[in-house]
Image 1 (cartoon, rainbow, N blue to C red):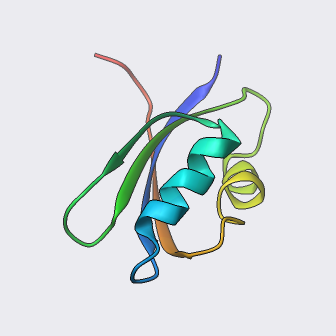
Image 2 (image 1 turned 120 degrees about the vertical axis):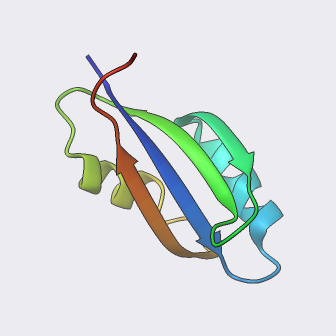
Length: 79
C-alpha cells in the first residue's frame, strides 16, 4: 500500500510555470494544481510503501530548481 501525501510548493518569483513543467517531467505525482496564497503549487503524491517519505520527496522533488520552500501533509485514512 502506498502513502498519499500532499506537497505545497513555493517557487522563486517568476519560476512557477518552469517549476511545474520540470515536476511534470518527473512523473512522480498523481495531480498538480496551481494555487493562490502562500504556496504556488499543490501536488498529490503516492509514496511507495517501503520508501521513507522525507527522503523520497527530498531526492525526487526538491531537487527541481526554483523551489524555494515546501510543506508536506501526510494522510492517514480515506473517508
